[in-house]
Amino acid sequence: MVKREELIESYIKFFTSKNHKLIPSSSLVPANDPSVLFTTAGMHPLVPYLLGQKHPLGKRLVSVQKCIRTGDIEEVGDATHHTFFEMLGNWSLGDYWKKESIQYSFDFLTKILKIPKDKLAVSVFAGDSNASFDNESKEIWRSLKIPESRILHLGADGNWWGPAGATGPCGPDTEIFYWAGKGKAPEDFNPNDSTKASDGKDWVEIWNNVFMEYEKISNGQYHQANQKNVDTGMGVERTLAALNGLDDNYLTNTFLPIIEEIEKLTNVKYTKDVQRVFRIMADHIKASVFITADGITPSNTKQGYVLRRLIRRVVMHGHRFNLKEFTTKIAEPVFKIYQKDYPELKENKEKILKILHTEEIEFNKTLEKGLMIFRNKVKDKQGMLSGKEAFLLYQSYGFPIELIKEECKNRGLFVDEFDFEEEYRKHKELSRTASAGMFKSGLADNSEQTTKLHTATHLLNQALRQVLGEEVKQKGSNITPERLRFDFNFQRKLTTEEIKQIQDLVNEKIKEHLEVERKEEKYSQAIAEEAQAEFGHKYPTQVSVYTIKDKSKKGWFSKEICTGPHVKNTKEIGQFKIIKEESVSAGVRRIKATVS
Image (tube, rainbow, N blue to C red; front, side, top):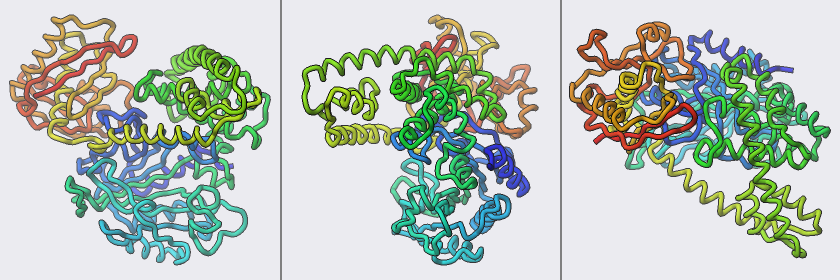
């Protein structure tokens, strides 16, 4: 069996041989990007460079990025959907273009992974009113002897990426599919026929090459981008399943140890009757471990809400097998699977397991309350539980519809599933509309106001260290056009006088009209020169360092490893004002501030 480690190693080796520089996996919580809750793709941390900023390691990059996607969380339970996954990616930042990108992909699949060419098919952008047919990609595939019948033309829904927000880089993509069905692959590749190319059963998409040759501007028009980029992505789990001839990602070594632990605890084999439940439990516990490792704790808002929901779904399904205090047990294999590549798991293991255990205990109390309410509801009921009543149990107490049906069946009742689905559909549409608001400014907003706030964050970081002590370190930040949010380690509430001193010091440096300088250097050198780095963040060997100069003995007030955006001079920032100081968690404080 091809293992995860082998696939990743061969991928990195191949692209580094093509002069790509390896960059580390970024945090699951995007830095300075309020538009999304989690890092959803390998390109996410690279947005400033896709927009034209020079990357310290050059124009060719490769990475293995950990990702979280929750948009299709309800699809988890089938053979291919996951909340947490790893994305293999390679990028050209204004360097090579379609011919080289497609050739690299083809060579890696056929020469390194030894996939027979007759098991491959591709799709290309068919063109629309905004952009023309991608004949260039088609002709490249034809030159590689992919037959015409295996090259599918799809519209923007299938073969167009972006922009991530209302404006920004975007362009056509070409997707590569692998025949995972039984027997010889059909000559014709068509997602509308019995081969079901688009549903991940027979023809499985394993690679996507995005060609960012356009930029969508504020008036809705598309024009040629100043810098043309290539952004590719290959899902580790899905590719492993394809390489091993499996139609179930959960049988690869990225999931199988977790499934086996669930089998052991439940004393139930991973068969068709329980596959969906076991998959959800395995997927959600893995995602929970990784999210917690990146500093998120369960709460009722944003990332914390997602984490809480994931853990509670695991507990809910475990309840069906009468499992108690089990989440830490099925989490154990996650640490073993990923221990080599993600040291943050080992470093935070004790904390992660404690959070899982505590959340499980607390949710069991909620669960018991919900079961009492359920029993009261159905005590004198005959015939059917309405969809609205069922949905209330689902929404308020996390009861999955399967458990509701099971409990009803035990009492001789039926559930109005049609009505439940309608209630769920309305709820999902409201959630989707609310989430869409997060994307209005696109990934990594580079507006003038955001740029001012970003630079002010550097001033705030150093001001905190001068007023409160050198032991203060950044624990995270989030910037919107309206305000900055900065988290730092400190054991107590700040006094009114301390807040005033910090605010005054930042404004003093703004009034001194200090120059902001950017340079690239080795990470080790930057640290030796006292540059600040965000705690827990992984950096490449070559980094960008922003220095806010002054007339002190050192010659600078602030020096930080960062990707931007920044003003050229502090005089551009305006008046800095702290609007709130509060606790985030034990030993971590938060400041919210504005500039005007």
